[in-house]
Amino acid sequence: MLANTTASDTEATTTASTGGPTTPSGRPPRSSLAGRARPGEAVIKLVLRLAAAVAVLTTIGIVIALLVPAIGFFREVQVFDFLFGDRWAPRFADASFGVIPLVTATLWTTAIALLVAVPLGLGAAIFLSEYARPRVRNTLKPILELLAGIPTVVYGLFALQFIQTTVFREWLRLDTGAFSVLAAGLVMGVMIIPTVASISEDAMSAVPMSLRQGSFALGANRMQTSLRVVFPAALSGVMAAVVLGISRAVGETMIVAIAAGSQARIVTGPLEQGQTMTGFIANAALGDSRVGSLEYDTLYAVGLLLFLITLIVNFISIRLVRRFRQAY
Amino acid sequence: MRTLQDSLAGAPTMPLKTGKAHGERRAGPLIFLIVLWLSLAVAVIFLLTLIVNLLLEGGSRFGMPLFTEYPSSSPDRAGARPAILGSIWVIATTALLTIPLGVAAALHLEEFADKKHWFNRIIELNVQNLAAVPSIVYGLLALAFLALIGVRDKNIVIGGALALSLLILPVIIIATREAIRAVPSEIRDGSLALGATKWQTTWRQVLPASVPGIATGSILALSRALGEAAPLLLLGALVFVSFDPNGLLSGFTTLPIQIFNWTGRPQEGFHELAAAASILLLGLLLLMNGLAIFIRNRYQKRW
Image (tube, rainbow over all chains, first blue to last red; front, side, top):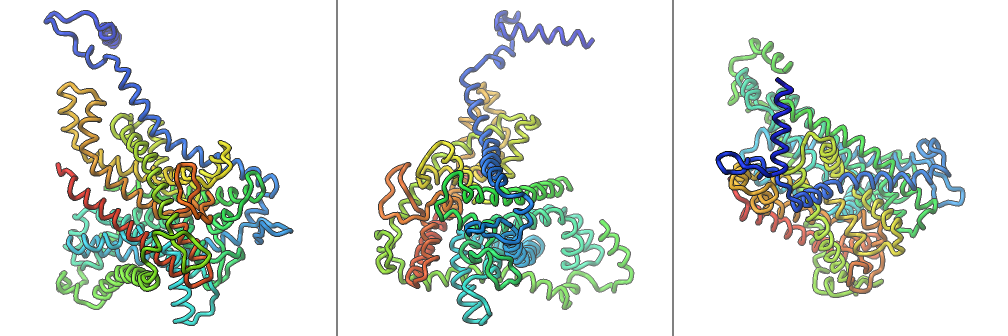
């Protein structure tokens, strides 16, 4: 039976490909039309596929571009000294390449940004998803999105001149210099609010209405329903939003390059200045480092570390988003 | 689910009057609502403060000299003419490079690709992941690429456009795919039933129907590229450009880089100029966003 079908199938394809004999009714067999070779369309399809492959090529390009100079770097500097050394002075006579100072500055700015963005973003998301009427929501959402569209240099300017200089030093009279990780982190946090809010809101809106109705029917009010039913049900989406926020905060460059300072040292308090990983790359790029020099390779070693951190964080986020999409 | 059971277990002990109307008026829920309002208010107040602060700082310097003058060591005579022209050159080149590429890739993924094939799944994962790679990494990539093909002067328009193109490519692919997905399958079936081939259907039915969505997504992506500075720093765009950029191989600086440059100067005059240039940049971005929204509302088909 199986053999039979295969045999007749093969027969059909052969007739189709030769395109020859017509059926008794005088029409050509149907498959001959669909199966006719169209070289023009094949070329177009190939071009489209190549365009899509650019995405893969970019990733491969990034990996190679970062790895090759980084390998050159690690020939001169021990991996252990790089990852766990606590002095970052690549341009000094007694050069030292411990990345810990850059990492602590990145941790400070990221942590401060998250302290701002997570509560405010979630608050905005709960309000927009559970409380706001459609009209209120349609006005507030674009305003919130505007925050995501402001260029990061403008945020940096605002952090340095208004938050740090005017608010911290003149109004609050805080004991701080020209730069601080606090000013950079706060402004970065506001920049990330829309990211956290919009992904969390999507996750909360995806929670089925029946769960809310069940909760209301049991006598819960809207706060209880939001916090104990909707929020736990949307938790993986909310986590994905937070994780994506982390990735944006770690990779943000201009705000920290402008407002966090440019001295690489271990940061012990929010009012100190510090140089983040991205801040170092931006600053080192200003100097004219020759291709193949140790200075040039250092850029890529830090870039590789940055890329790996965000890569891991992104994969966690993609995983979490998939889970909440499958849930209902 | 546990939470539902918990509230179920607690239900009999709750007073009967905990209906919605009564429950909302107690202190707890009221405070909760106020907290939610405040979290939105903080964001909105921040936005307003930023805009008002920019207008106060830079308003006096926002005028013709900003558009016509070249950078100068004296803040009174400096302008952003080369930076504005540089931004136009870089963004136009970026648009020409990235829109055809992004649309083609999206057409492949939505219309032609076998979604279960390993190659296409890798592409999808890549697009998602590239969208979240820090922008400065694209600068490192472009810098390495220019070094690889032996370009001596890294500060060229085409180099900057390359970095920005790769940066916004995932954004354009994702937006285009959504626009294509919004075209109902009946349109495709109808076209195929009339004897059109797969490509004819795509070119004459699907693509025209999704142009408004593609345009909206592309404009938003380009507005992101317009405000981006980090990758261009790596290409040495922070230079003193005292000439108009005039070609793909010309040296350049852009508006965000010029703002960064002025922000870092000690003189107060330069800070005012930075604020004035920021007003210009924000205005341009608002214009592009408005255009995108207009196109979406005016031309988007509702099926």
